[in-house]
Image 1 (cartoon, rainbow, N blue to C red):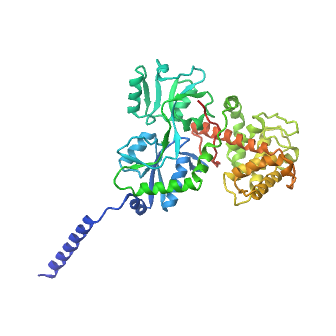
Image 2 (cartoon, rainbow, N blue to C red):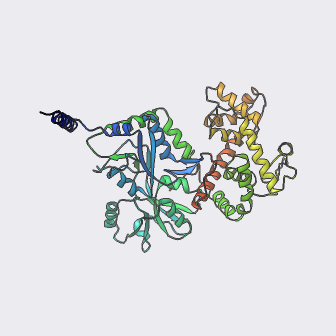
Image 3 (cartoon, helix red, strand yellow):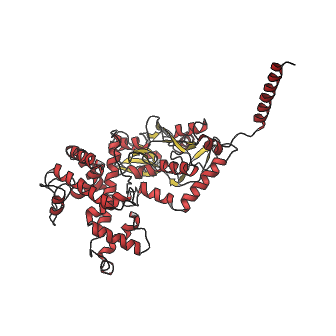
Length: 472
């Protein structure tokens, strides 16, 4: 046998051995594939409750959860953004994504193509109407109008069952629109009735003050992540561990509070007034807010929200204590930031931006955003000294002085002698900065939503939440 023949037989033997071994070896699990790829592919869709561009990039409850999960696994997050929940599901079923994190409701019956992780938020599908129309109490009341639905919001099987009970009921599916767009159409009177998830209604009602939930189309359903349903549950188990951990540690609750805020009452008059002024007054002031925002490294919408809270964008505003102008500056503060005429809109906005920037710098460096901004806004209202007193009281009380949610509980104590006599700066109306920050966060969130609808380019933002909650 020649040398070449021996070499050929040896190579053939190795090739056959390799095929035999690889054919018998077990294919890597879903989790192993993610770890080997060093990338987790998560599919979601745009929306205030899922994903949007903010704070120099991407944010949203689903995005933040997915990012934390990727960090836990030690892999890169690869986000795939599609148009609606239907497309989210399709990418999972086709194996083009590992996890669906698009605010998907977990069915109570088995969904063969997909399997779900733990429910982390409960929502209902609601019928939404405009206050200028009478409120329907059932599907029969909607006739002769039709119900407008974003693709993927309500399963076709559910709609068909509802029609069996209400034969006059009919609907229109919008494959190119999401829940937020349909809510806007109801707000503008373009359609009479639409379906939306209750969490989307909470997050957009400040922008659309005329909309109301009429009744629940479905009962409460849990939102959950979904993966492709196979015999391999390795990735599912890791998802379950992750959600169990962040729930136990309170991180999930913190994220929900961050994006939804405390459950306050819905102030219709305030929201309606704000939207009117947004359309009529803000356009003339917007260039000043943008210029000062860019100059001082502050999102112009945050400055506009601060100004609205202070003066309702009234350049001639004046309080009983003598503070004046759009940003309601005191004379000493105006002098400190170089403002000669507090009633001049451009000077006032620039002065307010400079002052907020100075306050931000005084906050300890270890405090990160968005806490840093909430503290700076509180100091803008009550003074830096009183803010520090409240932080000291928080620490003495066993709380975390670097967390706004902890400090805001102690600020009102500054108005009680038992507590303020122990502080350096004494009495303060400590409940006012709490309300002050709460309202600015609301106005800011509404401005973000409204400008995003107009394709506002992302700038330096601060994560925020809207505090309003719809009620049936």
